Length: 112
Image (cartoon, rainbow, N blue to C red):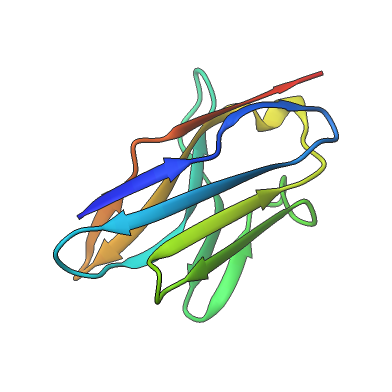
């Protein structure tokens, strides 16, 4: 199974970017959420599907929206009202039988 994240790039403060994650492989997995890692910091949760609910990090609530299409094995992250502190490498995560799969990451840089 491979997870391919795309959509990163340079964004402006107050602007928007949309990230996409596509899963491919011989078996299906559950696309679980988006994480990010800023330079010099630990990877942190951005948004995830958990037990039928959606969880957002406090820092992105009201600005980011996660969605997924299980039939297409895709998951998106709509990021609005971008802030410089959103600058990070964003990773999508999937799971199957208690094993986690990670995409390669896509860099988001927000300029002030």
